[in-house]
Length: 429
Image (cartoon, rainbow, N blue to C red):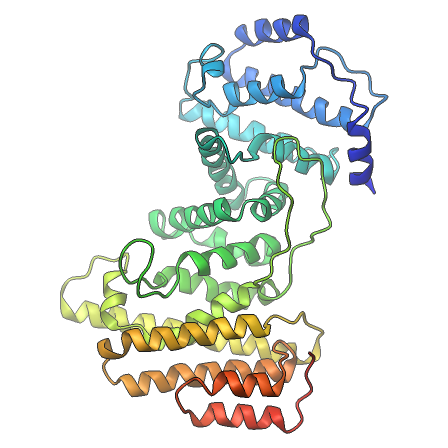
């Protein structure tokens, strides 16, 4: 209702182009130091957004939208454009950047702002433009730092809530943000994973999107975009396994999609996410037995010395994936007494089976004891399907399931799952 009111009142905005006012603003900014100039602009942004929802609000000396966005780009984001170069030519040093990030966090987390205004403010600062890659890169760079500070424990969680909405608007940039978070907390600072582990409880919707993008950014693949075979990093496996234990609901439930603020900068429309993170985790554990040992060694972040350390790494990697698989099954079994969202459709299962077949064929010649590892992969798929069918996570027509699974190599446990399903397990079309 509030968002609808915002959109209605947008047409009644009192802003008109005021060249004299713009000149006064420019003169004021030239007299201010960097942090003060940024705070001055942030206060104008908040007043501008408030005025869109309150047509009777008396405002003075406010620039129009285009001028306001230009000031943000020039003084806060430091976008190198012709317009910006005439306004500001100084970069931030480390301390000034921290002051800026603190000012941004404080403005977004202002307790008197409604959720709609918080999201609108966030979009004004960090909305991306398809036709301006340089400016978008600057916004994304600043957002990465702001999110890292929030994950580290600063603030009340509003920044992460707003980032969740932002990630749904920009899925490609969201994947980059997710991998940056992983890199910063798990690779560059491997002893600083505690803040990430706490996210499962503190911000489940944000965690859900991190899982979704991490499983897609670190695929098990024989021909990855970086030019060679890839598999998930060991620390990432540990992280997801811990998240499932601390807040497993992030695997199947979706963030609240009812937020509908004014988007000042963005022209995007938020679309529902159709692939729950459950499927990415399931694909990891089902395909893992088919990963050749040499891929695990090649993709590790560790510096290995000799064959013994390589063997230890492979053993730890396999064990960690087994634990992730066990945690996933334990979570699925816990759903038997609670209503759940259907997480696997016929399309997602077809995709999973297709990936399994393709990967098995490509790695067969590289695997030792290939038959046993294929059996293990099929058994994990069978266990996932059996429990999923029993608790309602998987809801498929028996004929479709039989036809699809017949394309896989023969497996006794798979046959039992199909037979059990055909004998009376309820399903929904």
